[in-house]
Length: 162
Image (cartoon, rainbow, N blue to C red; front, side, top):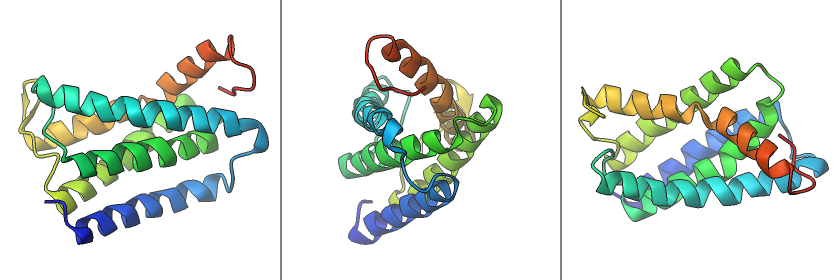
């Protein structure tokens, strides 16, 4: 259930993960700001609508609108691009593990706070654990998908850093 306490808890959780990401990268370098804002403006809205469409298709549980907005626009839209810029020089498998791990922490936190992420299977694999873990592992692809997208866009848009 979306309550002021749950919203505050989610914001505190996102802030805690951002603080960890900030220890890796204290600020977005001037040359990467265009990249940061492109990632923010692309991932957040894209995942917001994808979550709803996946719910309609039966692949995800429903995320209440405010929970979905917080999850996609703050967590995915603002925090994950920051983390991406902080770890993009690391080996890609390490980046993917970091993103999947942080995603799992956030999903479990949101599950406790909002009662969401309660679906009982992941594409036929039974159990809520498979569902939460599976979507967290899928989120681990963020660095790879972002890198590929930035490389493609970088051929047409100046000032982007993959």
